[in-house]
Amino acid sequence: MAVSLTIKNVPDRVARALRVRAQANTRSLQDELLALVEAVCPPCDAALAPSVPSVTIAQLWRRAWRLGPSASSDSAATVRTLRDARSGR
Image 1: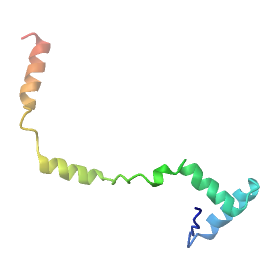
Image 2: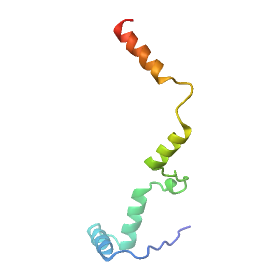
Image 3: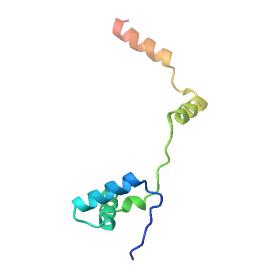
Image 4: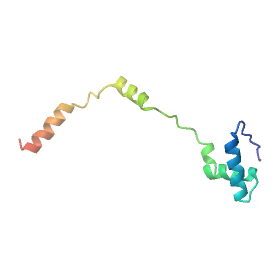
C-alpha cells in the first residue's frame, strides 16, 4: 500500500534546486523526490533496520577511562620482553 509523505519547511533554494533537477530529468517534482529516496535506501530495507546509536569520541574516552587498564596485561613487562629480544639478552 502506498503512503503519502510530507516534507515541511523546505528552504526556497532547496525547492528550486529540486524543481530544476526534476525538469532536467523530465520528471514531476513528486517523481524526482521518490527517485531520490529510492536511490538513498535501495530497496528501502535500511529503513526497517534498527538504527545504530552514534557514539562520540568523548563518550568512548569516558568509557575507557571508567573501565581502566586491563589487569591481565602488564605493558611494562611486554616492553621489557620485546626490548630484551631485540638486544639479544
